[in-house]
Image: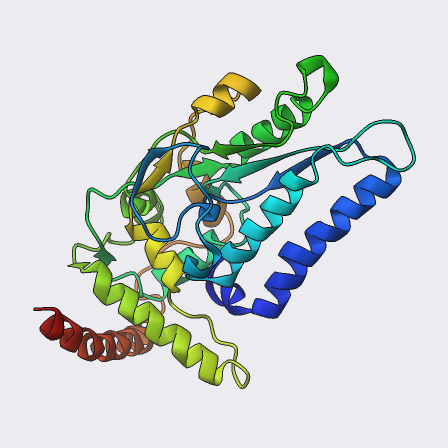
Length: 309
């Protein structure tokens, strides 16, 4: 989940918590014996540096989550794992559950994150990167994630010794990479220039906080798309990646190599890509708005630096 969808707390609660409760009850009442939950890295991550973390890491305390989506995903994952071993009503046996914690998902046709990124590129809003250039994050191609779900479902069966029963697994392509370098092939593949300006992470976090505040005030009148949320700043600018050792050992998961070339081709086939003189006026308008918000963030950010000094 990204952008303004992260700020719709009512819908998030209904889907992540209420929806998960409904599915668990349906499985128990209808005798469905296996339940694989799609969770997220965010159940343990909230802006702190994590290098090669594993499933022994504790859940991030709920009050430390910077967004309601991550908080409710954590609540829902706990519910799923606690339901492991619960009695099925219509057949003999118990419900076996596990949770997969995927990295950021990508692939041709992905509709949540990539179209938003491409729209920013085309509007001329991708003018800078931020954070430490050595920071590393992870992604997972949709085909690898599908593979993981199939393997997890199989690992809940008796012939596999129910090895995944009650367990959680981190799932990624297994290739930690700088977030912005990961998207460089998409930017350049669509004919745009990759930005050379790098801004401080704390400034961008302040910028994200400001845009969230504006959305909170004006969102009922105009549900605009925030340029970035605080969670997105953490997810893209702070090192956090995880070991696949448990998924490999218990599920037999082995990610296949992918890159963004097929994503580039997918967008090109749908008319995306830079053409001479395209959207110049729109780029100026959006660029001016972005510059204004960055200046406002700078004015908020500088006093905090002075006080800390």
